[in-house]
Image (cartoon, rainbow over all chains, first blue to last red):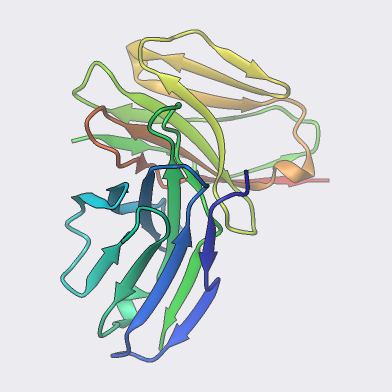
Length: 114
Length: 114
């Protein structure tokens, strides 16, 4: 299996712009997760999909954030009207519900908002 | 609410020393899972181990070993004969059944000097 992939790896944007990140999970993993990690901290959960259904959202996920997984495969995370506080590493993970359900992480997208 | 505490922010050892990374957790559930992940400088979180709350047997995998003690709510990780390649940030994490989110500690940065 190839691992979880994320694109882009780095994104620099100006405050107020919209950005979109993509995550491709391990093939046949039906669960997909988004986390955010700021410097010196552990990852914090944002949201989770089972197939195409978004089943859980953290309070961290403000209304400027939206995530989709339209066909139950890849997922996108969009941040509208970015703020400097959105600067972080955005991590995607996937798991197989029918196996150990262990979450395997991608390399992350590092967002810098100027 | 669940919580994971990694009190050691940074540890520095010389190659071939043994090192133990501490993890203390809080949860109200009797069923839960504990994890350790490694985050090398490249940034990708690498899965190391998953432990069920009902399985208190210690586990050894090569130079890595884990000590799970329910009585003290601890899940400590020991690296024997450390190597420079072990230099990374190590995260302990907790999940509860019914919730897919992982709760991470703030991580311990391990530096292994040659």
